Length: 314
Ligand code: ARG
Ligand code: MN
Ligand code: MN
Ligand code: MN
Image (tube, rainbow, N blue to C red):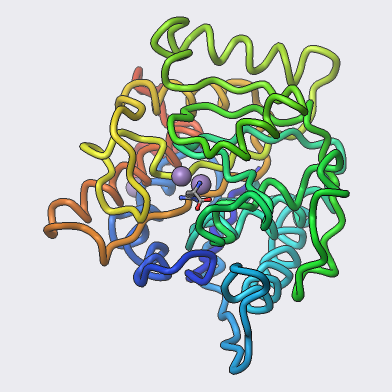
């Protein structure tokens, strides 16, 4: 068992500058060193380099469709290769449009995967329902089979065929859902837990129901797509679309600990850390360090420590 880290410095799924510096901020916060204390070898594959397209006219009100489509195609190949090589793969964004390529590439190797989307937002707008046009708010819509006839043919995306059923997806942390997204979630009967649901049930019960929903019929690989804006903005302020009333530190870590404990985590995205948007150096560092903490915990760092091993003596 080994871990692959893959940086995706990309920002064209939204209009704010700086989220392309997310991978560097997360590495600077000590990610690789932290992972080196866990049980498996870590391979840092560095950052992908994405092409800049000269001409990329908006489609309807969706900006940079070809650029986003091409970047995701490259990322899809990289994630697919890393999973094929047997690595548990960590994709560092970048904006959340990158989940299109990450989950698609994962699904190429693991067609029976399930998706846990931890986010303040549902990111399931179509170009017709999206208020902003931004593709980072539409990633899930590209994946879902039941939405196929609601999606236009976007330039840059002909390579993506929907591959996931609505029942194979669970959301955790929602608190800013657009009206078109609400209709889609209800129409498709998607399982989701808003912050209100977490307040009512407690995060422990939320994770139990999540795993019942996704894993009770069979064990299968988990794709965890973790948007740092799921966390409360007091913990992760340096992000493009912060929403008050988010996950506490302990709720965030509980989610990743429980996912680790399934033994089924296969790919994790950590997206939307934007170091250019922190009000201070401390704000940036706390956001990046939150990202490192949820990644390490998803990969098995525990709060109860662990026994003496060869690695713990180095
Ligand atoms: N729902 C809004 C939109 O469609 C915000 C999406 C924010 N997405 C994100 N990955 N931070 O534009
Ligand atoms: Mn060490
Ligand atoms: Mn979000
Ligand atoms: Mn998101």
